[in-house]
Image 1 (cartoon, one colour):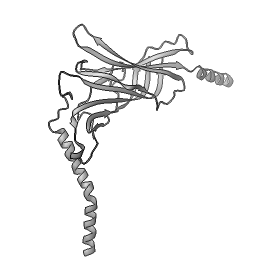
Image 2: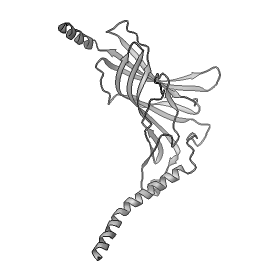
Image 3: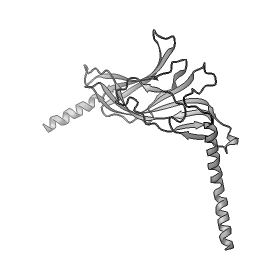
Image 4: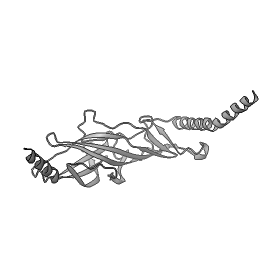
Length: 245
């Protein structure tokens, strides 16, 4: 009987750090969410903009539909910004360095793909957001994007096409949300080559547009995909067809 009591006591003691860690994390979540309003821009001075950095991690050009002038792309949108209300002292919370929140639980930029032709318009999967102890928020929603693109096949099959992602805030002007390209702009390190189209160049440009109605600028980030058709692809297929016929 005594050995059973000792065994149970040791088991309880061994699980204590996990219980404490769980309590500390729960306390951190509760403290961060206390008086937090997800509709409020995360700036201490509301006359200043929230700076949001965006990078497009290109995974694959799935298809180029010349007839309907649509390009299908698999990409991850990589957002970073700072939320001063979501920072904490590591020493007060068991050295927890980061936590996760569902999209919509905390403030997020209402950035959309302007030239989307998807029926749902926003075709991203709403993944969790990672928040670090210094207030940095990192959000990487993936998506399959249907992009409107003017495709000219006059020089087929020796043609080159330029298609673009154009992103901007749907409701915030540039004085409230400052959209900036991340350092790498377009990341192609994980890009899966397309058999029909080569991708010799990718660039990103920031624009600011002013409308007659309003004095505020409306910024956008335009990510360009410069594509070149692989003529060998058509030559090989033509040879195969001729041999079969």
